[in-house]
Length: 115
Length: 114
Image (cartoon, rainbow over all chains, first blue to last red; front, side):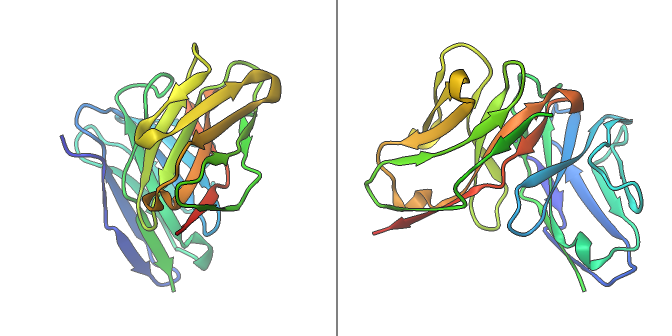
């Protein structure tokens, strides 16, 4: 059973471009969480999604950031008009249902560098 | 809001010595607590978790943690450290207001010397 997959692993963008980060949860998992890790910081929660629904996006910046988890295909975190401050590692995690009693399995992350 | 504090940013331990990494949490009810390890350039791996029951929790790689409600702590321990344990360690608490998303501490970087 493959783990959580994220691609690309490394992404370089120039200021003003768009970044698309993909997360394929583990098989059978329908809950996805996105986290951002800034340098020298712990991970910060961004958004929690179930299939076709955004459940909680309280940690996501109001502008330029969006996330989706369609019925088919991976979850996508989209950052429009990137700025240098968006440079970070972005991790997704999946769980089979609400993570209340379930472990979240983390992907290897996408490291975004904005030039 | 649920939060965790890891007081030690860096810790250096000799190989074979014992280890204790500190974690303090802030939460009114019984918290769901976790310890994760992150090797350089890698994702996070769960070491252990506490939901309820026995306050001494055994995890993978020889790690254990003890939940102490009176001290609001969930410290990670290992009796004998191996060089391969050098990594970043994160304590986390599940936030019931965000679908049990995790609130992480800032991490403790462990260096193991020969």
